[in-house]
Image (cartoon, rainbow, N blue to C red):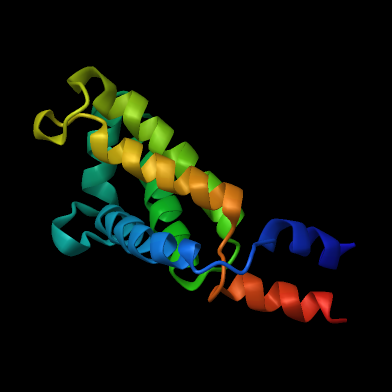
Length: 150
């Protein structure tokens, strides 16, 4: 039963297309999560990000920063290695919906005005990976083959 559940969560085809999407998107998400969680790459860490999130109405701010940062950092790492890509991408898609509607929607489309353009692109990539899975070269594909061979 657990093997069947895993096969459903990790199911993917043998295309290389997902690899070309999940690695750069994973890097972007992991870096943004690292900004929120650890203050790396010019980020503000949990305290600073939490204060900002509380100031825009996402309260409690620290918890929201922890959730968003964890989703982005660990979800990004999952995409990079291709492990549990479908659920990771689904969580990232929800994270992007929150970012778009809580932060960017009122600023229009374009990034030059802090709009939702970038968030929308990340949302689309996340949805595509949630639908397709990790593809060839993913841990999911290797584990699915191994479990299916039993």
